[in-house]
Amino acid sequence: MDAKSPKNSLDAYWMPFTANRQFKANPRLFVGAQGMFYKTADGRDVLDGIAGLWCCNAGHGRPKIVDAIARQAAEMDYSPAFQMGHPKAFELASRLADMIPGDLNHVFFTNSGSESVETALKIALAYHRIRGEGQRVRLIGREKGYHGVNFGGMSVGGIVANRKMFGALVTGVDHMRHTHGDKRNLFSRGEPQFGAELADDLERLCQLHDPSTIAACIVEPVQCSGGVIIPPKGYLKRLREICDRHGILLIFDEVITAFGRLGTPFAVDYFGVQPDMVTAAKGLTSGVIPMGAVFARSKIHDAFMQGPPNAIELFHGYTYSANPMACATALAVLDVYQEEGLLTRGASLAGMWADAVHSLKGLPHVIDIRNIGLVAAIELEPIADKPTARAFEVFLKCYEAGLLVRTTGDTIALSPPLILEQKHIDQIFDILRRVLSALA
Ligand code: PXG
Image 1 (cartoon, rainbow, N blue to C red):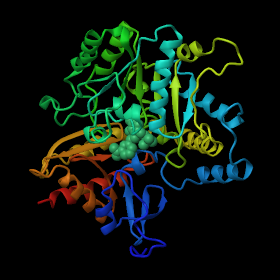
Image 2: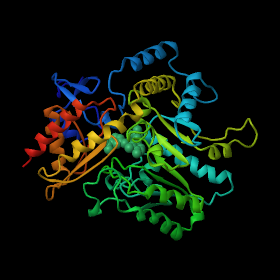
Image 3: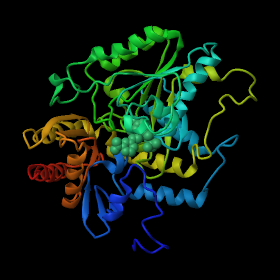
Image 4: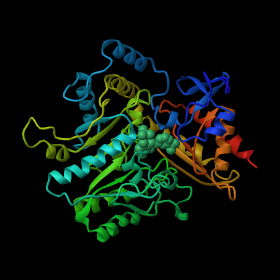
């Protein structure tokens, strides 16, 4: 690619969440992907330590998924989403409702995690209104939360850089404190011991605003983008109790944790706490075709199914809700997950995974290590006055050495495809050990 040619330059593509000028000065291009590996434009294999962007849970280039897409494209490319249906949309929703615990029985389809979040927040507000509690207009999120980049999700989110440039955001939103930073929790394996009482922030916000004004509280069971922040033991249960006490809907944003990431199909299974809605995307189609979903409990769905049967119950949806290509992909992905036991595979690998990541303790600049399921974080001491620079250097050196990792602040995040084997774990941590040991 010639950066100067107007026909095919690097210039036209404005890249998302990327240092465009730095990237274009020295581009990193993938041109292929198979199993656990990407292939770079210069012919090198790069081990995928982050499942693309936390999404390719079934690994890359899976023939069954490729075939399903090809067949669907030939059979029916698109079918209108409003006032029409197609069989695979119903089949997929039924399968998903069967998989998720409790009575999260109704599935609304979207095209991304961000859209799933907007959809869940809108359903929460409308649900209260149709039940005659239209004064419940407030939404509660959490510091360091990531709920996508659209206005609702950005507003309940708590990552400063993602919010500060974009005006006053949605009104009526407040935030609980995050649970990161208690020194007693450093180098915890799995759920940290200390901090469940931080859930009482929700009770404080209830007292401040009056609970009758609050519609919903949304949290990621594990805050991934915010730095892999794992909830303290008992924290999520406590949130559930406070929501129950005050009639507030609890939404789990499982865009990353759903579909096996924690070694269980959903984080709902892992933590044994039942939310009122769950948002998902990413692993639903293993990242192959964009798709998201919102799961709602029966009481929410049923509250809408009133009034004359010819009335549209929810004025919300997308041109590509339940797109046939996405449905066919998701059905094939679920088959692969099921046939290979991938949604619980993380549980059998989690011990090895934890041992491997915690073996990096003591390397230069490593100030904390955290893990849960097949997620791990290695937090580095920031370089004075240059936050994020050290982790970015590790990212670049890993890429050169044949490993794809992700950085958030000065934390290295890992979240590999669920088809990972012991030899890949060895390779990931051999490379990381070498790169971290050689840091200035
Ligand atoms: N909610 C959560 C919990 C997420 O993690 C979204 C919503 C938004 O999804 P979409 O599909 O609109 O991007 C996400 C997305 C990273 C990273 O490395 C994380 C996400 C996306 C890209 C990068 O931290 N999470």
